[in-house]
Image 1 (cartoon, rainbow, N blue to C red):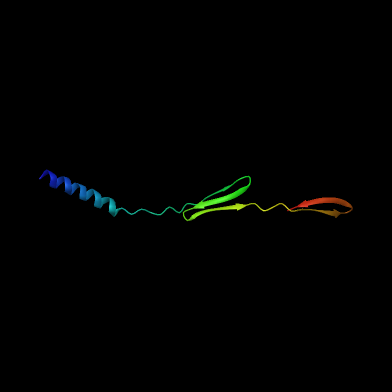
Image 2: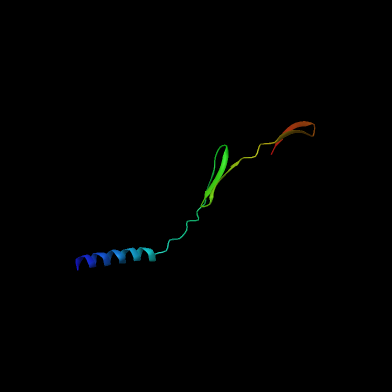
Length: 69
């Protein structure tokens, strides 16, 4: 009788854990670094290099001005 109660308790505990549904984690984490920016999520990670700074020299009212984008 004791073994029957032990087995019944184990089956009830196992079936109780199977009833509970878990939700998917859909968190996305992004960070900006000195050289690169990147994001990591449930489906993988992406690393992006920052674009290069483009500078050019133009003349404005007879004065040489350096403009960067």
